[in-house]
Every structure is written in structure tokens, then in C-alpha cells.
Image (spheres, rainbow, N blue to C red):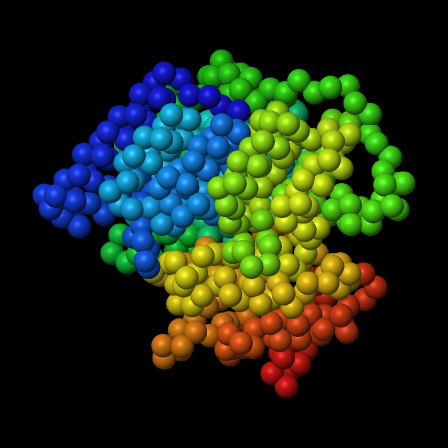
Amino acid sequence: MYLYTDLDQQLVNERVAQFRDQTQRYLAGTLSEDEYRPLRLQNGLYVQRYAPMLRIAVPYGLLNSKQLRKIADITRQYDRGYAHISTRQNIQLNWPALENVPDILAELATVQMHAIQTSGNCIRNTTTDQFAGVVAGEIADPRPTCELIRQWSTFHPEFAFLPRKFKIAVSALEETDRAATALHDIGVYLVKNAAGELGYKILVGGGLGRTPIIGSVIRDYLPREDLIAYLEAVLRVYNLHGRRDNKYKARIKILVKALTPPVFAQKVEAEFAQIREQRKVDAELMARMDAVFAPPAYENLQDIDWTAQFQAEPAFANWYRHNTHAHKVSGYRIVTISLKRAGIAPGDLTDSELDMVADLADRYSFGEIRNTHEQNMVLADVPQKDLYDLYQILNQHNMARAHIGFITDIVCCPGGDYCSLANAKSIPIAEAISRRFDDLDSVYALGKIDLNISGCMNACGHHHVGHIGILGVDKKGAEFYQVTLGGNSDHDASIGDILGPSFAAEDMADIVEEVLNTYLDLRVDDERFLDTYRRVGITPFKERVYA
């Protein structure tokens, strides 16, 4: 993973000192709320329903064990002893005191972490596949590209005050897209041209929120050395023409739709032609980026036949099948740690659990941890010979629920329990559904299903692209929930269709169960929920649910 240079560390230290001064002036009353707001947002600090919320940057979801232990220490000293994994692969603290935030940022700086540009109208954290670099079939490892984008975008003075927030994702796998790339302001796909040269396909104008849109491809092939120039051209066109008079129409997706993708592409190409030569990424820099993510010192191991162990312990067999994934190096396996537990908000870990995961990373996975945008964590390089030991430890700590990708692996924003923007609570709905489907045999019979919950139209829970999506809405001061069906964030991305009028909170587990019963009655053979829905449409679901 990337390690800071002296210059990187200096910049982060200076930002901490700057924000400490700004916060002290705000608390002393010499800096107004309006003056302080953009300053705190550029440092990841929100004002939520009951307390500030600090969003800590985790570039492309990658952490080392030292950093994770520091997060654990910070939650003990400055928060309430837990942290939350967000759908942008970042980490959030929900209860820091405002006056302590500069101290928290200073602590983070000691382990090469910060909260810069995790909020505000700027370029946010670049995300990618949580299996990047270790899964077979990639065009190339996407992490060097992510790091290149991170270095370019952090502190970029021209793009510090865009019309609206801006998000970039990078994908390198043709088989599946675990980064929801088509739903981003810019989607970067690693590709090769006819000559076998590595480059990028560029998509723009995707996004969720009030106006969910799947992005449009504006470049089928871009040479690797031209990436920064092209991204800069896209941002310049957006910065110049994006709406600033209406925040609901300020995202790049609205501009691309208004201009049409071909016209937007023409403007980008014209700007790109002007700056292409000055912004080329030289081969030496690209080689350094690649070297940063050189493979670790893998042992020469053989794959293990677990047949006998599976027969002796079916629970371990389920965990292996559903919570681990094939590694491109023989003798290793990718392990997903489930952070979806009954009685605990999806994506939450206590300080002791953070320490434990850091210990497991040191013991089994070269000291590295990855956050997923599905709000789980990954140990990417686990020797197969250690899998059973790892499983036993995770199982003892209620972190081995064998359901990754199934109905109870719910993506859920913090909702009205924390967020001042939310119309309704999300966590209790996730809890009710999780408890309703607590029998794993029934869960497995349903097949893989994405269920996503958002507490408002900002769609932090990505409800639009859940196979089943749930959106909290306000009806005359009461919390209700709208259901969408047929969303998907993979390469064949789709926006879910609204089922009909919203439902009361106490009915939601029943409604989801009826949707799933309808699916079971309609599916052919082992057809996936999404395939059944696309085949039969929304009408039979609507008829059953509202009968």
C-alpha cells in the first residue's frame, strides 16, 4: 500500500494545525457559522442530529493494522467505543465533541490518515473493488490508478469548491463490478486496446440521490498516460457549466443529461486537447505507482481439500463457501468479515473488535485490511491452512455469519438515529428484516439478493440499486418506507422501480417477506431474484403485496 512521503506528512500536519486554529476561532465566536461550515466540511466534519460526525478517509478502502488500532484508540478516547464503515469505504465516528476534533485529526496524522475531502463540494474518496490486486481476471490492478487519482485530487485548488460533491470509482474486472462504477460522477474502467495496451474507458454522469442515473460512456479508450488530463478536462467542463443556483440540480449527472452525453463529450475533448501534453503522466511515475502495490511475499502453498472438515462441521463449510473467495495465488483465500450482526447496526465495530481485526490482519494477512462499500471488511491474503483457525476466532466474536451477498447482508445508512437529513430510521428496519430471516437454510434457498436501505433521498444506503431497495419517507411527521425492486449496481446496472405507496415501519419485515414469497412462486429453477424480476416485471409483485 502507499506510504506517505515527507511532503505528504507535512501537508497533513499543516492542515491539522490550520483546522485547529479555525476551530478555536469558531468556538471563541470570531468565526461565524457560515464561515466555519465550508472549513469543517473540507475536513470531514458534519453536524448531525445529536452530535458532530467525523468521516475519516480510507483511500480505496485500504488500511494497515497500525491505522486500525489507532482508530480503535480514538474511539475509546474521543468517542463511544465504536466506529462505522460507510458505503464509500471510509470510517465514521458518530459522537466526537467538536472541540476534540483537531486532536483526533492530529492522532490520525501520526499513522498517515486524515479526514480531508471526505465532505464538501470537492472530489471525494476514490473507491474500487475490495478484492483489487488479489482476484483472478483483472485487466490490471486498479489500486495504482486509484492512488494516482488520490494524489491528483487531494488539495487540488481548482476543484476545491465544485458545484456539488464529486465521486470517482475504478473497476478492472469484466466478470463483475464490486465498485458500483456506473453510479459515479466518473467511472474509470481499466481496458486494453487492440494492440494490448493498457488504458481506460471513461463513463460520466452516474449517481443516485434524488435523480438516480446510470452514467454514460464518453471515451471507449484513453491511453494510460492521459488519465489525469482527461479527468481534469471533465472537471473543468463541469466546474464551468454545472448549476450553482440549485443544489438539487448541481450534480454532473444533471449537466450531462441536459447537454446530452455526446455534447458533453465534445466539450471534454476540446478541453482535453488543450491540456493533454502538459498533464501527461510520465512512465516513471506510473512505474512508481505500480511498484507501490507489488505483491507481498507469498509462500509457495498448495490448495487444501477441506472435504472432511466440511462434513464434520457444516457451519465452517457454509462460511468457506459464502464468506471466502478464490485468490489468484494458489494456497490463499480472500476472506470477508461480516459486520452484519443481529442487535448491531450494519457496518459497526467496537473498539475491541477493531483491535481484534488488526491482530488478525497481522497474523493472517500481511497486516492489511480492506473496507467494502457493502459495509464489511476483508482480509485479502489468508493462507488456506489458516482458514479454520481464523473462522473459529471470528465465530467466537460473532463476525462469521455465513451470508455475504444474501438477504441479511444488508447495506444500511445510519438513518434517523444519527443523521439530521434523514426522514426515517434505517437501522431498526434492517434489524427487523435480519431477525425475520435468521434461518440460514431459508436465506440460502432465496439465493443472492442485495437489500439496501436509505433513510432519505440522499441514498447513502444505495437503495436505488438494491435488488430490493427501501427508502425512508416522511408522511405528515410519521416514518414510512417506499420499496423499489430490480435495482442493480453491477456491469448491467439498473435503477429500481417503485413498487407503490409506502408502508409503515412495523409492516416492513412482512412486506419484504411477501416480495420474496412472490419471487419463490415465480422463479424458474434456480433463477436469481433479479433475473426473475426482469423476466416477469413489477406487476405480480405489486398485486401480491397490495392484495
